[in-house]
Length: 210
Image (cartoon, rainbow, N blue to C red; front, side, top):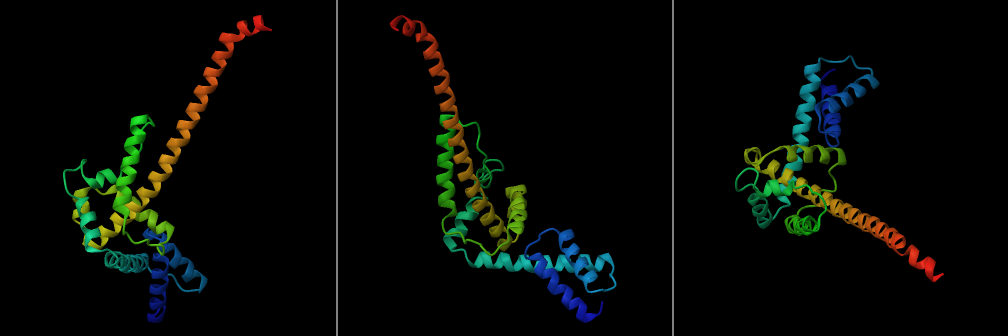
C-alpha cells in the first residue's frame, strides 16, 4: 500500500462512513476493497486509524451542516431541552414512551405529540443522511443524559437533538396510531361480549314470543 493507495483508501473510507457509523463496518469495507484490488493487507492499526479519521471527517461535516441550517430561535428552543434537573428536563420528556392506553394516557400523549410538533418546527429535514447512520446517531442521542449532552460541542449537540426529536416525533405518531387501534379492538371485544350476554339474557323471552 503506497501513498496513492492510501489516498484511495481514505476516499473509500469516507464513502463508507457516509452510510456506516461503527468502525468495524468501515474497516470491513476497506478490507474488501484491498482484497478485491489484490493489495497486501496493512496492519490493523492503519485501517483502524483510516476508518476513525474518515468517520470523524464525515460526521463533522454533517454536524456543521445541521448547525448552519438552524435559526437562532430554533437553537434556543433546543438549548432549553437541556435545562433543569436530570430526569425532569425537556430532554427526558422527548424520550417519553407511551403507557397503557387509558383515556387519561391517550389525552396526555396527544398533548405530548402537540409539544413535539412545536419542537420539530423549523428543523432541517436531513434527507441525505443514510438510514443506518441516522439510526446509530439516534441511539447515541437516546443514551446520553443532559449532562453528557451539555459536554458535547455545539454542532454535534444540535445534530443529535434534531435527529432524536425527529425520530421521536415519527415514533410518537406510530405509537398513537397503535393506541387507537388497541382502543378500537378493545371496544369491539367489549361490544361482542355484551351482545352475547344480551342474547343469553333474552333467549328465553324470544322463545316465548316465537
